Length: 564
Image 1 (cartoon, helix red, strand yellow):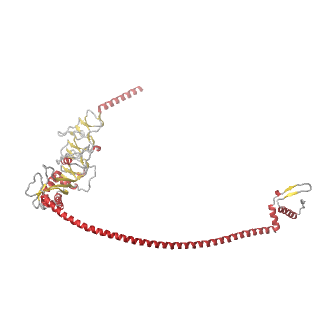
Image 2 (image 1 turned 45 degrees about the horizontal axis):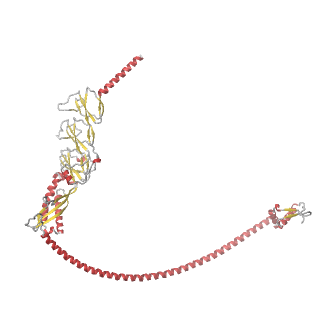
Image 3 (image 1 turned 120 degrees about the vertical axis):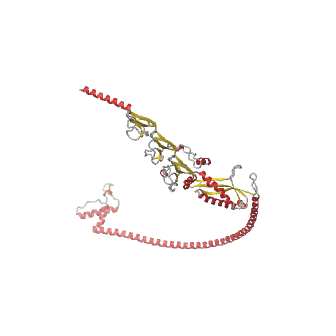
């Protein structure tokens, strides 16, 4: 029985392993990291005649959704597959970006021709075109990605990696819209219903002060008023066109470049002289007017051609014809001509939304009437006459100024003499004042010193008086203290005498209290003699008195004392 179970178990394991191996090697589909998987169903309901990709589960043919990298298991009888590369939209490399903050003439020309590109690896956008499905009911070629209609997908693919079915989507790569510093981007909708610039994502904030109203009707094609500020934008170039407009002031000149290229403006003066001037215009475009200019003129070159280039000669002629020939040589009059021309040009260009800062007159030639200049020779007679008249006027003015200067110089010398006299008077007065001040100061100082000496003597007298009073008080206090001490000692002795009942008892007490037997020494000097050495006679007398007193008090028998 046990052997049968082991046999069945071994067979089961082998069967499971075989099925697993068959499933692993037959059903498994591996998709690498850089590829996606498109499944093709071999069985199921047939597709419609105009349908290339299955849209519903169970339909036969190419499936809509692609599978990303990984491992999948599919029945090879039901499914076949294709591997395709993933769609990668480049993010660019900011380290390689080379922004140009000030463009030269060639670069400006490239910008106007829409061929200018910044150097570096910039981001891309991916534009999707859906190949399957029916056209949009409204006939628009632009559809949403969430719909199932064929056409251009409104939403773009931003930088990243995507798994897209190549049978369903066609991917077109375009560079992102780059707005450099010093420029704005004017957006033009190429299709109706796509006027949605306000929803475009940007890497930089926008100027909220700009008006967001469209120049075109809502939902129609045309240029919108809101402009894109400098930055990087992910805009669908199939749906919206971005035109770069340089912001700030630029230069436009009509001058003599060479003998063969002479763009100076010619007009007759009020007196009939031929005036030829070279003019430079400083002009610019305000960001709020950029969309209007693009909508009306198409590009900046058209602005120069139709506004500034065409209006400048006529304005110069109209304004310049009111001035005399000599006015173009005279500095003040020439400046008035320049101001009048600037004002008129600002009025005309302002109506076209073009800002003119200044019109500069750089070159002026005055030619005599009814004459032809040979090889650019300019008639000098008028200039010479005007110059000589101005020289005469200036010479007369110079002499007048010199005469006035001599008068002023004499007055200055007289004033300097008066100043010297006044200085000496001031010095003398100052010396007198200083002497008076010093004398008053010495007198006041002597008075102060005398008063100080008097105050010091008074203080010293007061101090001596106080010292005498202190000495007297201290002496009296010392005598009183000594008297009180002696009185206290006498009172103490009196009390002790009274306590012992009399002076004799007190004396005996004092003797007994001070008596020291150790101080008695006996000497033997020979036969029949016995001497004692007492320290003092008073001590011997005191001892005898004490012995007598003790005998009288106790009534004891007398002792034989040595006879001396």
